[in-house]
Image (cartoon, rainbow, N blue to C red):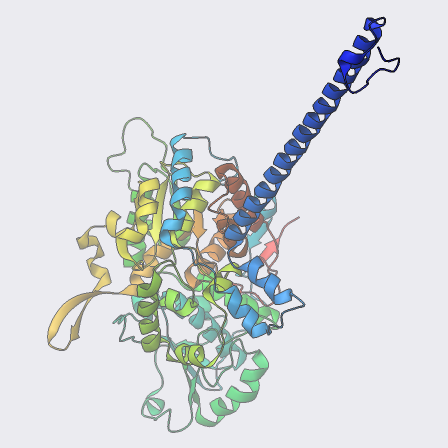
Length: 597
């Protein structure tokens, strides 16, 4: 038997030390198991790390996709524009910004469903929903009635004005004409209203306003006559150079322009005829008393004729239903008809219905002029372009020859009126309950009844003047006009606009979808002047709202409510008229109102 053991063969181990051999191979097998287990554990940890990493990568990618989808065009295209590796001109950059998707009517379906669900809960309305910031607002009191000058003899000649536009544009033109007459020491002929072949409205000053009150109230300020002297009536005013159009007068001209350019014509020909004369007088700089005269004319001298006052009072009674007392502004709007009829109101007292008035500025003329898009696709584009070519040829030419801002960029900058769908979402987010009584002002809504579906479905107590007044009651505001050989009935839009003005001004709360419209501007100013801090007006911050609506595919309703309420609450702040802004819209200034301590 060999003295050396064969290590490669376990059976060759010495028979005299069996325990030592067994322990050695046991330890060897255990070391093998540990190494195998550690390898397996390392692979498991490595796999888990990979899975977690893949999860975060995928999650980040999806969040990025959602963000890019949400912001559509702005961030995407601005990042391209600002990239140092790509040279893009400013004009091309602006064009690219506008290539994002426009909000279509159906993009609001998700938000409208959330709004309907919220309204169904019938939650309590926010405490300040129907209120103004009373303390600071009530500190301003009307004082445009005060006069600190002698009457003007008006012996430099005659001012004749033919105002264009609708009732609200005409109202502004009349007030501006009163100021110009005083400035030039001239006599004002009762203003005329331009006939429009589009609207076929034959209304004149005496159809809308009380002529005698206008003359008598302003007699301490200017001389007003009903017509030109006979020797001037026979003159060809255009031939002698006395006709002045809006083309000849820069927009918002200062008083110095009229003294330098218009007074010489007046002194030479004894008459100047302003044709158009819309926004042709600046708000600043202007002498204190002339600015006060402007306010005096708008808030005191222009009173509606009795027929409009009577029908307006009837409209207010039906809006309020159970009212036994007039509203705070009724007597300024409807005069002797302000006291509601108590006929049939015997028995237990019932609380009068308060109502919200909305000026839904969504007529085709405004949409065409805005150059925005409203979710109607190619058909809408063609229709608005065709309307633009007929009624705004200069704008059509500019659009063809100049690189204008895109519809998407205009919307992001807050330059587009709210659509009906956006308007109803804002109202629901502010907290107006489903049973709220609402009055819709405005002419024909573009898109017809279908465009009001969202409003009427979420707020069924929605009415218009045509719904509240019978055909017989509206008959005085209609006009038989001739076209070719067929007689037909057409509305007197200025008279109907006066009814909208009354209903909106007297409302418990007033909301607008476009703060730039003349009706909204005049109504909000009237509510400030006579409201005593109790007549809230809801103005949209369209730039901020546009940013909120861009998130409509992902935003939760609670967050939407918070952001909308914050955006609108800031527009309720009480402040003095900003420089160069309209006194008709912002009468809180020392010329129109007095600030009490």
